[in-house]
Amino acid sequence: MEGEVASGNTFWTIQDDHIASCARCREGKVMLSQNSSPCDLMAVSNVEQLFRTANPATQGAMVSMILTMMRPMQLRCLAAKVAVMTRVDFIGRLAPELGLKVLQYLDAKSLCHAAQVARKWRCLADDDLLWHRMCEQHIDKKCKTCGWGLPIIRNSSANKRPSRTDSLTPAKPNVPSDELVVGKRKRADSDVGNVSDASSSSANGSSSSASSSGSMVVAVPVVPSKPAPKKRSWKSIYAERLLVERNWRKPKFHTIEVPAHVDGIMALQYNDCKSRYVTGGHDSFVRVWDANTNTCIKELSGHTQGVSGVQFDDNKIVTCSLDKTIRIWSMATFELMHTLHGHTDGVMCIHYSDKWLASGSADSLVRVWNLATMQHFTLHGHSDWVNKVQLYKKTQLFSCSDDCSVILWDLETHQQIRQFQGHYDQILGMSISLPRLKNATGASPKLVTASSDKTIKIWDVDTGTCLHTLFGHGDGVTCVASDTLRIVSGSQDNMLMVWDLESGKLMHSMGTDKPLTQGVINCCVVSDTKIMTGGDDGAVKIYNFYPENVYF
Image (cartoon, rainbow, N blue to C red; front, side, top):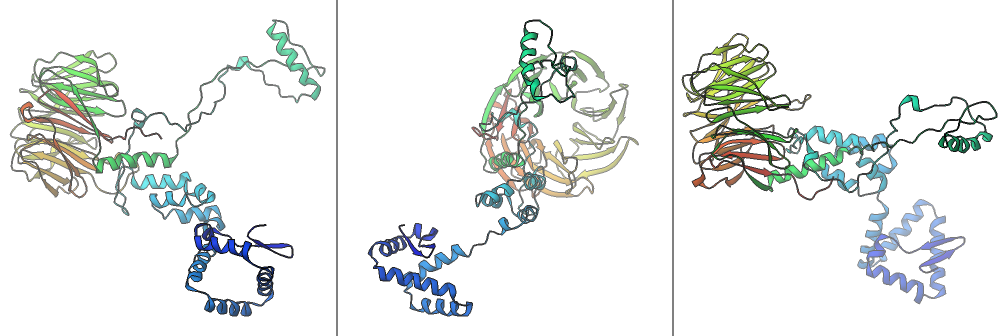
C-alpha cells in the first residue's frame, strides 16, 4: 500500500493533517515510498519496533537524540505534527451535562465557532438551553458583559418571509369521537385479512364482517388535518434579533413614505403586534392603516378641528381634538361610542390604561376619566398648556406643560408626588421607558422629556434626578419616543436623531426627515424594528430596520 510500511500485522502510515497541507512532507512521503531501497524501509521498520519495545526512559532518550540530529525544516514539520497529535477534545470526553456547563460561559460568537469543531460540539453548542439563556441576557435589556441589547420583536411574523428549511409535522387527525371505534382487544394474525374485507364491505354499504373471535372490525375514516408548524429554536430567535440590532447600529434601513392626510399630521400611534397604526391630522380626520400594506382601512370623521392625540387597542380608539372633545370609537365597527366634554379649550393629549383615561388641555388642566362610569376629576397644578400626559403604575400620572415643568400625580389622593424641573422652555414631548418583559430586572424606569430649549433630558423616575442632558438639535425638540434601549427625537429643524438610552450618547443623526419647505416633525414613534414620523406635509415616513431577504 502506498505510503505504508509493513511491520508484522500492522502498517505504519506517513500521513496526517499537516502532511496533507505541506508540500515538503508530501515530497518526503513520495520519496520514501518510491525511491527508498528495501534496506531503508526495513531500517525504518526496525526502529519502530525497537521504539515500541523500549521502556519510557529509553524512548525519551531516543527522541532527544533524534531531535538533535534533525534539520530546521524537519523540526518545523515535526512541530506541526505534534500540535495536531496533542490536541484534546475535552468536550467530547466530558458528559453532556458538563459540556453544557462549560459552553455556557461563551458568548454568542464563540458558541457559533464551537459548533463548527465537531458533530458533538455542534449538538451541544446548538442546545436550546444555552441560547435561551443567551436571549435572557440580551433581549429588551443590555448585557452587563458585552454591552449589547436586543429588541423583542413581538410580531416578527409580519416582517419575516417563509423559511426555506422549515419542515411540517402532521398533527393528529381531528375526528369526532362518534366516528372512531378503538378496539381494546388484541387482534390475532388471522384477523388482519378481515380489515380489507371490512373496508370494502363498508364502502359498498354492506354491514361489517365479524372475525372468527367475534370482535368487530370497523374502518377508521381518514380525515385531513392541518400541519403543525415547526417550533423555532432559540438560536434562530437570537440570530434574527441580532441582525436587527446591527441594522440599528449601522444604521441600515429602507424607507417608505405614505401620504396620509391632506393637511399636517398631529398625532400617530403604531402597534406592531396588531400591524396597525392610526393617524390624526389638522384636517380633523382620523385614519386607521394596515401596517403591512400601508393602506387605509377606515376614515373616522366627527371632530370639527385638528386631531391632536390618538390611542387604540383591540377594542377601542380614543381621539382628542382642538374642538375641546374626546371621542371613543369602536375598533370592531368604527362607530362612535362616547363623546366626552369637560375642557374649556382644545384638548392637546390623551392617554388611557385599564380604567383611567387622562387628558391634557390648553386650559392648563388635567382631567382624569373613569372609563367605567365616565365620571372625571380635575388636577390643578400647571399654569400653561398641558402638552403630554401618561399614566404610570395604574395609580400615578405624568404631565408636562408649557410652564417648563413635569408633574407626577397620585390619582388616589389627587396630589402631586414630585416635580421635575430643569428645562428653560416649553416641554413639548415626553416618554417613559419601562421594561416590557414581566420578569425583567435591573435598571429603574426612566422619564425622557423634549423641550423647545433644544435639549432632551433623561430623568430617574424614582428619585427625580436628571441623569443626562442631550444636546444635538439645532432647534426646538417637538417629539420624543423611547423603548428600553434607545431614544428617537424629532425637532423643528426637521432632524431625526437616535440616542442610546443608558449612556445618553448620540448613535445616529438620520438627517433631514423632510424638506424644510414642507414643515416640521410633529410626532414620532419607535418600535423594535421601525421608526415612524408624521409632520406638516401630511405624510407618514417609515424607517424599517428589519433585514431584507433574510430567512429564519
